[in-house]
Amino acid sequence: MTGVRMQTVAAGEEGMRLDRWFRLHVPAIGRGRLEKLLRTGQIRVDGGRVRSGHRLAPGQTVRIPPAATLPPVPGKSGGDAGLAEELAGRICHIDREILAIDKPPGLAVQGGTGIGRHLDAALDGLRMGADERPRLVHRLDRDTSGVLLLARSATAARWLAQAFRDRTALKVYWCVVVGELRPVRATVTLPIAKMAAGNREKMQVDHDGGRRAVTDYEVVEQLGHRVAWVAVRPRTGRTHQIRVHMSALGTPVLGDGKYGGRDAFVDADGLARRLHLHARSISIPRPDGAQLEVRASLPDHMAATWRLFGFSGDDPAPDWPEA
Image (cartoon, helix red, strand yellow):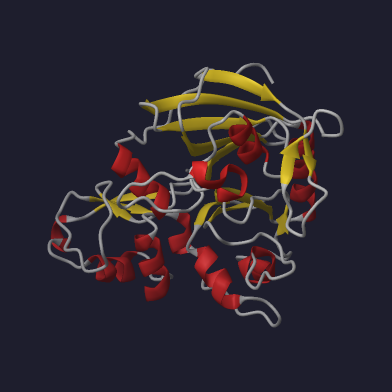
């Protein structure tokens, strides 16, 4: 993850509380931001999650994410300064052109009927010293978590949007599906269209009037006939594409009652009844030939599911077919 700094605790800092250590080494961070970065696991000690009162030992390594060194988020009239401050603690990459946010589940990207809080309202507060307001270049569903890229200038917005149109941006999602997914590796080519009935947006497979939708997937770990951890690469960007395709295969995404109904839920103690779909990573070529790669950690409810089912959590290396 670009911009992450690893710093070793010095001999003279033995027994120092972590919050005091940060005030000494990263004075720009406030207590609120420190606590958010600790809660989301972006700040770690020797790779493990800790609290602000953790006592340090010489030789330990403290992970300092880029969000820890950013200046405080200024308030902005008409914007959501509180949400901007919260999202500043979820920055997983920042450079002169791009800001990458680890979007939490439940947060809409843009406003609409019945939507109170949304990321678009916080963009003025996420300038982070730039002259221009960051721009949305792609979207994630409200209940989907993970990597969301923002352009920090009009120039960056143009080449990012072009990369998404040309499908040179490689997006990889992690999900848990209910049931046994066979074959373990395949490409789904089922056209998708919006359903005509009802007020809520819902998509369906439509072989006559649907738009082309292509999804590559690979089963990473299968737990009997019960659930599977699946890595997914959507080649097209249709609304709810992964959810519709997984449901059409008879293995709905865990927690996706909208497309899987009751079949999308599993009775197990400690298992959240929330959508288990996460935008794990984006890899995108820059105009200068360099490659940007950004990853986002699992949200809390999915991390708990990984522990419950004993999934390894290591990044797989799927053998994706030629796009």
